[in-house]
Image (cartoon, rainbow, N blue to C red):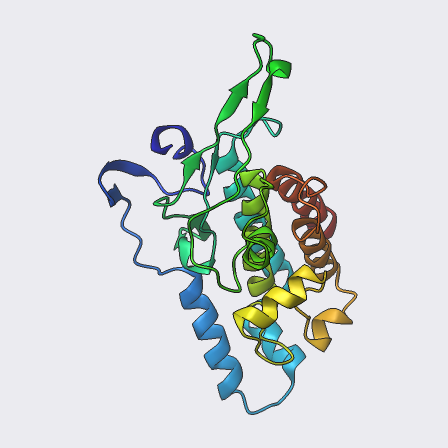
Length: 258
């Protein structure tokens, strides 16, 4: 994993490892969670009460779009160039896992990453191979995990499996939502427990947007909301790949910036 993926500019350079210890670039600029904490503190300390202006003073809509591209492209680069036969999945995508270096957020922490296994159907061609599905991901359930894991928590005996890269895409959407809103999932309009969030997700409902984002016609906000619709597609079989989301966001950024 380290040797194949460190060439991506959205994944830190990794030079060696031993057990869970990793030798990598020094990154004193913190992580995405540090940004979120700072943004939320700035918003609380603001005296103006103008949520639109204060949100955009912290980060302009087009800058939020650029960070969404960092998020989507890092996951796409981890999965690999072949969308039909991805190589790895991260399995723990959240805002804590993105380190900031040289103006980019980079996907880090591969302790739970795994290779995506392939079944061979007796043919030498790619058509004779099938991705192995997973029915368990070995992580504690919380609001930032995938829809499929929330579904599984309600029906543990369900034998259905899921493509693991599509699990990453869902969780990638959670991080994009945080960057768009400076809120965590199912925190607005009131914080929900994990159990309550599970019920909402399984029913097909999603984390709400604050009014200034929900009603905005800013093309950057519109593009990010569309990307979230892509990431949060209810049926994992219909959910786009991380590369498709990344390409969509890149195309919209080019349209906006010329």
